[in-house]
Amino acid sequence: MSIRSDRWIRERAREGMIDPFVEHLEREGVISYGLSSFGYDLRAAPEWRVFVNAFNTVVDPKAFDEASFVEVEDDVCIIPPNSFALTRSVEYLRIPDDVLVVALGKSSYARTGIVANVTPLEPGWEGHVTLELSNTTPLPAKVYANEGIVQLLFFQGERPETTYADRKGKYMGQRGVTLPKV
Image 1 (tube, one colour):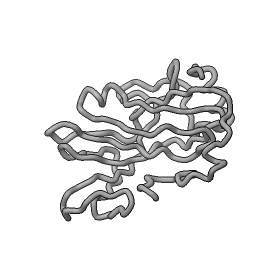
Image 2: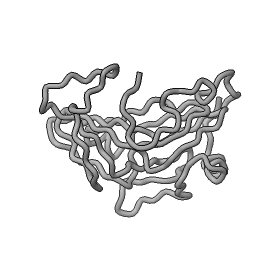
Image 3: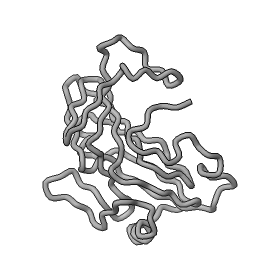
């Protein structure tokens, strides 16, 4: 399995793998996004689900209570100290059947205590990427919509026996911020 370069990413994006696709790295006055040498920097959408403890709710992936967060639609999101927010990517992805994608947090956020977590994007999966953002600091932290949030790395190997699409994965085709499903 090998990591794919900007040339490969550009070709696949033109075939519909990333939509919308930015063919170069946008950097002026923003946290960078778009195509880089060996990856693609996704943007956060202006849709946020910020976790709060106003109702003493227990966060349970098997019985998710929407009272555990507030919805915010804005170009910025303030994540409370030691808290967590969900957003989604601006881009809609269609992962080829022989590719696995790993997302890593951007250094500009990591250096301010924001940890981004995204599970691997499996072969054959498609949708908006739901992004999990943790504020590990004792201070409120600001994150920006329509700017870079995570970098995707594309690894190509042989097609697996069963893709995410083949097994009809529960997060297939997700649009918007998608909450836990069982």
